[in-house]
Image (cartoon, rainbow, N blue to C red; front, side, top):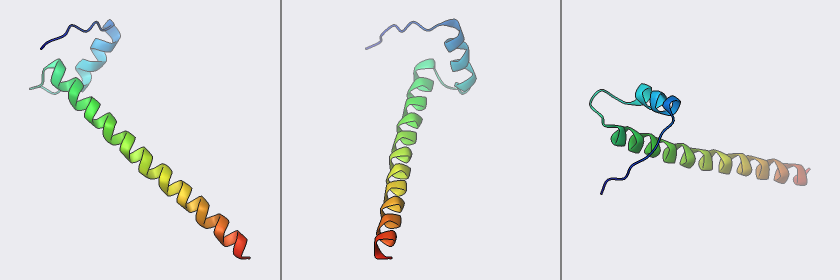
Length: 64
């Protein structure tokens, strides 16, 4: 089922720059949302790594 979405002119123009030659606007938005999901996953992984390093650092300081 199709839905209508209103975009400001500037947003529409930006979408044009990300849209690949063979893609519809819908496909481009879907691809960009998929990429955003992956970025979110990567951010979670990196935040976990930072927290783990902080934990390790605290453990080393407590051992001293």
